[in-house]
Image 1 (tube, rainbow, N blue to C red):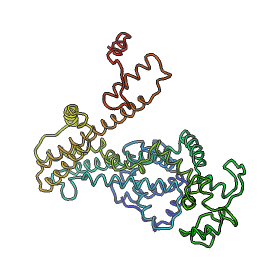
Image 2 (image 1 turned 180 degrees about the vertical axis):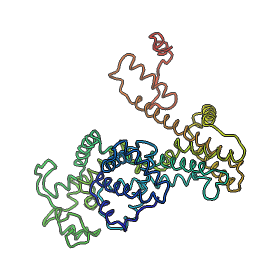
Image 3 (image 1 turned 90 degrees about the horizontal axis):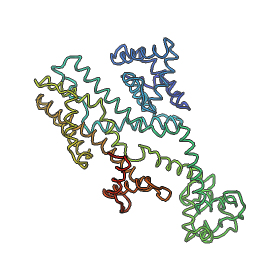
Image 4 (image 1 turned 90 degrees about the vertical axis):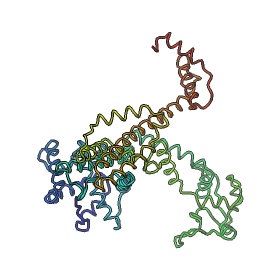
Length: 493
C-alpha cells in the first residue's frame, strides 16, 4: 500500500506533535481513512480493505462517517495495546494502518518534532515490534516460495489464497508480539497498577532517603533532614574544594565540565568544613570518595522515579528491557496462521508434483504421536526444532529454485512438522517453567501456622520437589503413609 509522504501534507506534522495518544490516533486514523478510497482506485487490496471497513462501519455506526472514524480509533487503540481486533479482516486493516503510521513517523524522524512521551513510547514500541518480527522472518527464511515468476501451475485464485494466508500469518505475528511489547503501557492505565506504583514509589522514597549520600546532600543544601528537622548549617569549604580537589562551583556561565561539582554553590561556602570530615560523618573512607559520590549522585527525585520504574519492571516485565524480545518474536511468528500457510504451500507443491494432499489432522496426529514419546529434555528442546525448521525451509527453497517440486514438497513437509514440534516444545517449556515457579512458591511457604492435612500436603509437595532437585533442602516425609491416609479419607482412588 502506498503511503502519502508527510512533506506533501504539513497537517501530518501537527498530528504527530499532538500531546495526547488518543487525540493523536483520532487525527491520524481520520487522515488514513480519508485517503483509502483514492488509493483503492489503483490497488485491489486497498479497495478490499475499504469494503471491509464499510461493512464493519455499517454494523457499528450506520452511515455516520464521524461515528465510523470514532469507532475505528477506539477499536485500533484497543488492538494496539491489548491485541484484540473485532475480526481477522479488520486486523488486516489495523496492521496496514500501523504500517502506515510507522512509515510516516520514519519520514518525520529527521525533523525537529516535539513528541509527547506517551506517543513517542508507543511509536518506538511499534518500531521495535516490526523490526523484531522482520528479523525473525529473515532468520527462519519465512517467505513465500510462489513469488514473482515462480507461480506456474497455480491458478490466480490459488496464488491469491496463498498470499493472503502469508499476510494473515504476518499480521498475527505482529499482533501477538505487539501485545507483549505494549504491556507496560496497557498496565499503566489500570487503577490497580497505579495504586501499586504509588506504594512502590513510597518504598523507593524511604529507601533512598536512608542512603548516606542523599542524607548528606539534603544536609549540605538545606541544613535539615528529610522530615524538615534542622540539623545545623554545614557547608564544604569552597577554597579546599578548588585547591585540593580541583572542583569548582558550577555557575550559569560554565559548561558543566568534569571538574565542576553540580550544585557546588549549594554544597560549598566560605569557612566550611573539610571534605574528609564530612566523609567520616556519612561513612565514607575519604573526602575524595565522598566528593565522587556527590558528583555522581542523581537528583533524588529522578533516582526515586528510576528505582520505582525498575521495581515495577521486575514485578511485571517489559519485553524491551528483559532481553527476551528475540525469543518472543520467534514464538509470535509460529502462530496458527503460519502453520496454515505452511500446510497450504505444502499442498500446492504436492498438487503440482503429482503427490497427495495432506490434512491438518494428519499433521497434528503425527506430531502428537511422535512428541508424546519424547523425554522431557527432548520435548522442551525448542532450539533443536527451530534448527530443523530452518533446514527444511532452506532445502525447500533450494529444490524449488531447481524446479524439483517433489523434493521441495518433502522438505516443506519436514519444515511443517518441525514448526509443529517447536510450538509444542515452547508450550511444554512454558508449562514446565510455571510448574517450577509454583514448586518454588510452595517450597517457601511457612508451615508454622498450618496444621493437619494442610501441613502434610505441603510436606508431600516438598518431598516430591526434593526428589527432582526442586526443593531448597532435603525433606524427610513418609510419602507411603501419607498416600494411605489419603486413600482412607477417600481423597484419591
